Image 1 (cartoon, one colour):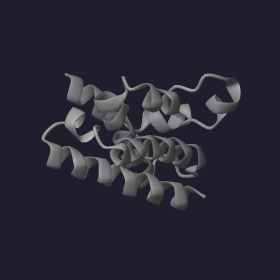
Image 2 (cartoon, helix red, strand yellow; image 1 turned 30 degrees about the horizontal axis):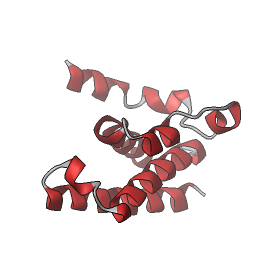
Image 3 (cartoon, one colour; image 1 turned 90 degrees about the horizontal axis):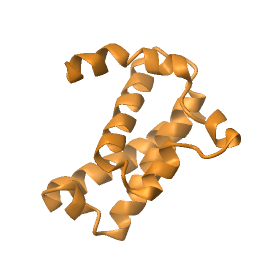
Image 4 (cartoon, helix red, strand yellow; image 1 turned 45 degrees about the vertical axis):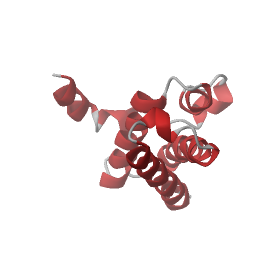
Length: 114
């Protein structure tokens, strides 16, 4: 269910954030196998939650997208994270975030880039 994947992703995301604060940098935080595992689980959880989210414009779905983008921008170069974010086959792509969900956060993205 959406709520279960959302809660799982958020718990792991917060673990990664805490580790990054303690370590001083994202790279330092990823020296721990626990943190690397939490990172992968957070990315997987957000992708699955977004695929199941029924109310695309709900605040929690939009926050999931922003958290996923945060992970992608900070850690997307890591192969294990990239594998969760960029599906390799059509079956995996169907589980990803639907296009209309991204439309809700697009103005925020443009505002932050500009």
